[in-house]
Structure formats: C-alpha cells, structure tokens
Length: 392
Image (tube, rainbow, N blue to C red; front, side, top):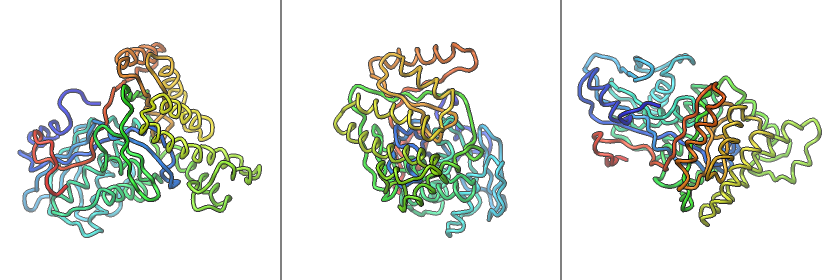
C-alpha cells in the first residue's frame, strides 16, 4: 500500500502535474469480509465492512477534440475509445474500460474526460481493489452525466464488469459494500434480496487485517470451479441455490457427489455462521463472533479448499498472538489477507507479534493494519471537503 498522503490527495497531485486542476474527485473503499465467504453467488449471507482505504479518481473534462485519458500512479496511462468494443484481459485498465462500455450501452455517454487514479487498497490482496476502482469510476461518470443511480444499481454494474468483461463469476458482495459501507459498522448483506443490516462491532474489539503478501489472480484460480460445484450441488438437491438447502439435505447426495457435498457443507454452514455472527454483534458478544470466524476459516480450508499454506500460517500465528478472539482468511482465497478480531487494549501487541512471527521464516514479511470501518463511495468537491456532493 502506498505510504504518505491518502489516495484523494495523491490523485489530485497526479492530475495537477499532468493536466492542471481537476473538477472533482470520486472515491470508493476496499473491503474486508468478516464472515460469509463464497456465499454471495449462492444467494446467501455475507458480512463485510468497508475499509478506510480508498481508490480515488480525480476528474475534469478533456479539451475539445482530445480523447478520454486515464493515468494511474501504479500502472501508467490509457486512452479510452468512445465506445469500447473488444477488451483485452491483460489490459490494466480493463475494469475502467468495462465500466465505460457498460455505462455507454446503458445510455450514459459523456464528453471526453481526463482522470488520475490513486489507491490505498493493496492490489491483489483479497481486499477488493477492483471493486473499489469500478465503483469510483462509475460514480465519476454518473457525476459528469448529472445522473443518479442507486447504490445497488452502481454495485450491479460493477458486478457485471467482473462477470461479463473480466470473466470472474463473482457475486455482488464486493461492489455492494463499496457503495453502501457504513462508518464504524459491518453490514449484513442478504445476497438474494439485497437487504442490508448494519451491525456495530462489539465494544472493546478491533479488526486486524493481515496481509501475507502472497498474490494470486482469481481469474486464473479455481474460483469458477467452486461456483460450478455449488451449482451442481444445488441442482442435485433440487433447490434454486444452496441458500435453500440444509445440512440434513446433504445425506441425499450419493457418493459420486462427494466433492459437491463438501462444497455445499461449507456454504450451508457459512450462511448459518454469518447469521449467528450478526446476532453476536447485536448482542455485543465478541467471544462468539471470534469463534464463528475461526469456524469459518476451518470450513474454507477443509471443505471449500480455498486457503493456502501462507493463509493457514497467518491464521495460526494470529490465534497464538495476544488478544486474538478469532481469525480467518478473507476474500476469494488462495492468497492475500486474513482477518482477526482482537481485543482493543492488545491491538498494538498483537500487531508486533504477528509481524515478528510471520517474518521469522525469512521468506516474506507480514503487513498488519488495525482498521475501523469506513463509508461507502462518494463524490468529493475537493480533497479537503470529505462530504458527498448533493447528487450522492
């Protein structure tokens, strides 16, 4: 993650150095999922929180006769065609091009513009840097078009970019929490009805996000295989999705469905754990919340098989560090970050323990952030004015 000025200030600085003064900045946060993993595309429950790490896009109209140009602090520049057609999967700007293309097809067409992008969301760390970019760019284009969409509609467009443009068959959780995040709260999401229920963390605890500094591209992983296995399990059980199945139903799956049974057991159990975790938060029961997070990791590791040696090692270290009430991998899996629930008074001690013990092997170092929940995406008139403009 970039150090120094936050992303909005850096985006403005890049814009000034490249073109002059921007008109506005749009921003959207990354997320950490406390519990409810691989449930969103099964129409289940998830409980993420928006992070205090943003992706910011500083924007102004381009001079007449010039194209739409984007410059990123990490990836260089790109030119957007008026109507994007064939998009290359390896293009760093594919998420931006996807937003531009789908909004154009929806009739949201604006004059050429210029934008500078900066981010505080670690890329590839399972903290939804792509969703933050999609939401921030969508809000920017809608703002230029003087058009208002609901947060759910913005999230759905971002999900379409992932599904139709990038080729990742993901659910809506990442984009939705990036649009609807509530400061100091996680949000229980019913991924079927899209009903949202903000829940505060219990008193006396904080969330620690722990980066293993391993990376894997989800499109190149077995993510799609997991979704397909869930769909096969639901079809064999005769239900619309695994949201509608129970653990007792799994005895009806024959031996030829052993893989599907294990995948379904995770999803069904994870939905139950997520609902129980939401109640634990309402009740202020931090111990139970931590236990449910740990159970979630064990299920993701053993039944869903999306953990990794680095993630398992990080979770084990967290469990054996001061003040930890529970820990789990977070995000799609295979690499990236884990998350822990930690007693507030021992957070600094916890961070030192995790960093020191993870780095003891000498292979790589850990990065630990103690995080409060941030707010959903918005459009800012200046970097000093952190309030949304009236169209949000």
